[in-house]
Length: 286
Ligand code: NAP
Image 1 (cartoon, rainbow, N blue to C red):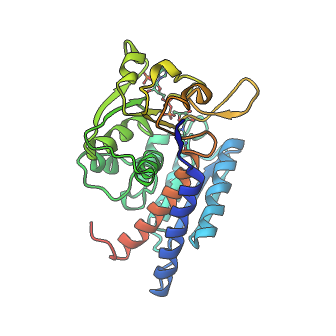
Image 2: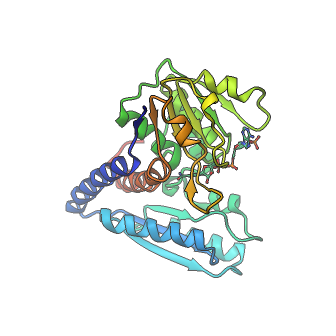
Image 3: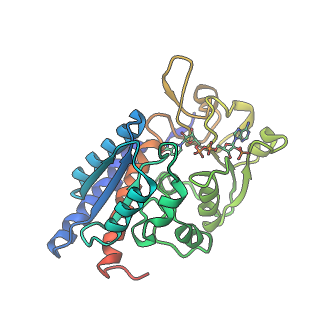
């Protein structure tokens, strides 16, 4: 029987810590501010944006939404980003991705000032993560690290396997585990004998995007299994990448879906926004 890592509880703890620090900042006359840009009317993006705004309000962070129509031009979007880069009351800028067809995710990411890039997607922040000299961390991998820390799972010296190599999850995840002295293997769709590689893992992170992809035969007894996946099963129910029922009796630690990694992403976004406010007000040295 695995110890179940409760992402909801850890997220609530992080958010409470952020709220406390925000309150302290306010006594110095500083209110962290986050601009949230949403283009078009994708229902999933709308849910994410609403959740982010609600979380900001609960933490005492000022948030401002910029909802643009789907036919917004690249020039209009970049002009908005430029104006937000120049606003001192806005410390963090996030643009909900993916953008509608015809708009470039990459160009928008690169237009956001690296000091306000609270998603940590800008090439400069990605580079900082590579060299281990960073403040902002991409929210989902940072959330995974927070879960491991607070569950007391030691990374140093451990065999870590990350399934998935996306820029948003897999690659930065591998970097963060490496920075904490894990011995890291990154797997992908061309990996041969994936099950055997995964079975070596003391810490197995699944970021594939396929329901029940990680099966019991891929898990070493006692391993910490972290499920980043957010999929729909055959009944339309939210589920992860791990076959939870089969893996839970074998694993040492496991994150459920929902209630595992998911709630951490917003918590880390709030943490990054707080950090941005501190950096921009010279309260944190870079
Ligand atoms: P992605 O960009 O589609 O990347 C998926 C990765 O999985 C790719 O590197 C791909 O390999 C690999 N893969 C696919 N099939 C495989 C196979 N048969 N064997 C081994 N590797 C395989 O997805 P993502 O953006 O990283 O997201 C991954 C999952 O995490 C999704 O379910 C997403 O919804 C979820 N997610 C959750 C959160 C959260 O807050 N909890 C945040 C972000 C993402 P190749 O590179 O070779 O194609």
